Image 1 (cartoon, helix red, strand yellow):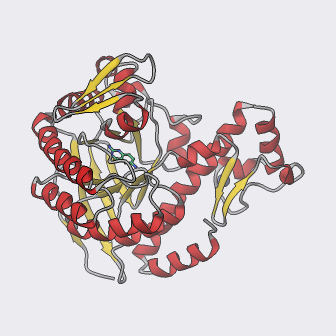
Image 2: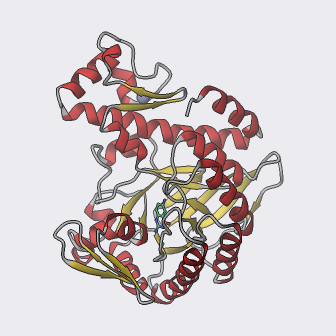
Image 3: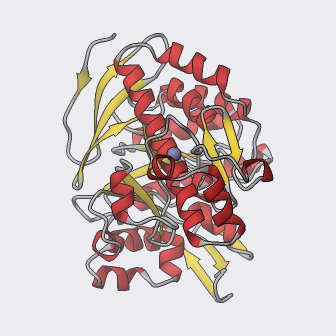
Length: 378
Ligand SMILES: Nc1ccc2nc(N)nc(O)c2c1
Ligand SMILES: [Zn+2]
């Protein structure tokens, strides 16, 4: 194992514990006002100030450290001033762990039906009431300061896939100018602002974006514009181009990823943080995640299967209930069924990142990756 390299800096400081093997994989610790958290880490998504179908107490029990919320949604409803009056997002949703808020960049482009992007910002129609709305770096940062998350994101444009080179170039350059405006608008101490690398699927634009943002000196870096429909090998190629340009002593956050096979590849390239709606979303249509792939517990095959989803899983669902019972609940549209599949899927990913961290610390990450990928069918 390589030597320890850590330097303590204020907020979202990244203390690299161990770098191993011939991969970029590393195990670190992220310092925030709400605690010190282990990486690699998976962050459950709580878009509207709740991780759908589970309580903060259950999240704590399953080992969640930092959870995500979305500025776009909370800005539209109930409003970020209201959350500030309630004492901030931690108080509002009774979560005393870490919170990271996304800036709205992605949601505007994926949710807002009508949108117009200018140098100033993005005009869009609210998906709730169709009203005309506008987000800019200044508005998005002010909203995130109101919410009071430990880590907030610069306002960016998530470039759609595919995109013409020229469009990707102009958009990436604008995202860098927006990052600078985000930095200037960010006046709340005790809160870390991460920039977001863009560049589409173009190696040179990815490198320019990373270099420009690193020279603006942020405490951490998101990698955006990926997991937007591109083939996985293309995503990995963009990681290979981008991650080595980001400072070793700062956290790297791959946004919107993902499935376990993507996580283990991204960790190999040196990613520390992940978020994805996938585990909670597929849980709600009765799909459970296992180390051998997906198990659609709603299928008739499990009607009389009295084993748990996964016999080796330590989660509340697998410790107490059978596939037959969970299938029955899902078929009967019982809310508890969704809760059990959600609890299992979140526990599975949180436990998976813990296993990757352990493998890195014991300098056996590359063999861990091999074994996992051999068993996991995509
Ligand atoms: N795949 C994703 C997911 C979330 C994102 N959020 C922001 N702000 N920007 C992106 O490019 C994202 C990409
Ligand atoms: Zn389980």
